[in-house]
Length: 384
Image 1: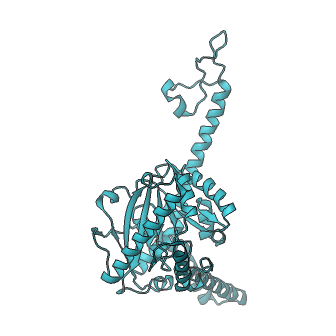
Image 2 (image 1 turned 60 degrees about the vertical axis):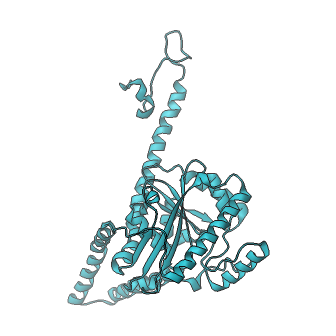
Image 3 (image 1 turned 135 degrees about the vertical axis):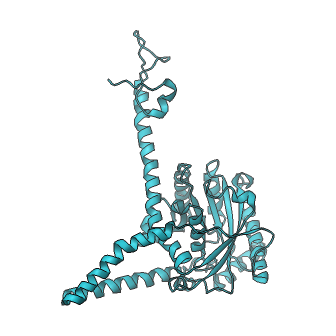
């Protein structure tokens, strides 16, 4: 038997097996609670290991995701400025949060990623996504292993998934700040979906929204109920693009064309939302989207948001450094290989290899761009 030399007050934190005096002792004074200690000790080790796994995963995810923020803020020079109250700004990057964002553009999600990168939170980013997204090579797999929430759009199944996954995510260690991105509209804005959505709004007696679809409330309400006491805040984000920049598409980002985004962010403590009453919580979300619609309409008229100080959050160099490392590891050997082929002559098999690699890379790039294009979005929202 090996005895721990820790002070008794450290017994829980050290994870060692302690023989101690207790209310249940034998005639020699030894504890009869050894089995309980033996259960607690491996559990503490497993919990510590799982938290370590999550931290490592967040760093590994960052190594891939920051390639997108590099393309946005370094390759294309895209700007993303922030409108936020100083009292709200002090919390960013220091707490877990549910992020609610409008879904009007191909790359609204990328603007969110750029800002989370600047606040050092990109590795902890998670999404509510369609189930098929987790099968996307590399990107979807990373979302899956970093515990994003994937839904089938079947409420009977999705409500179980929501409660289970949110409770798991909410147990993340506090030193890895997480954001969970939720598009409450359920799908990207199109004119056809907007027309159908406003027909539903009229039937249900909700005000007309010019720039948003009617928010889906059931998943939001259930999410907040599952987050109770674990995730402290909602970040209400409204993103818009200025007309003096390039059209906000992933294709333009890849071509190095600068987009100009502005984002209005409000921090809302979850405790101020009436999530215990499903009907009141749903009405609260509808009112929030009515406010977001007025805010976006203001932007379309003025070309900017107003009432809150405009801030430019400086870029960090980490995504640039990571990209340069990837380029050194992957691109330089490829260029050397191709140069040697040119110098020494190329065989048919080598030519086929280079052509195949080029075709596959181009196909994957075009397919990835297609996933972000509004016209190729899902049919969700086209039916009442």
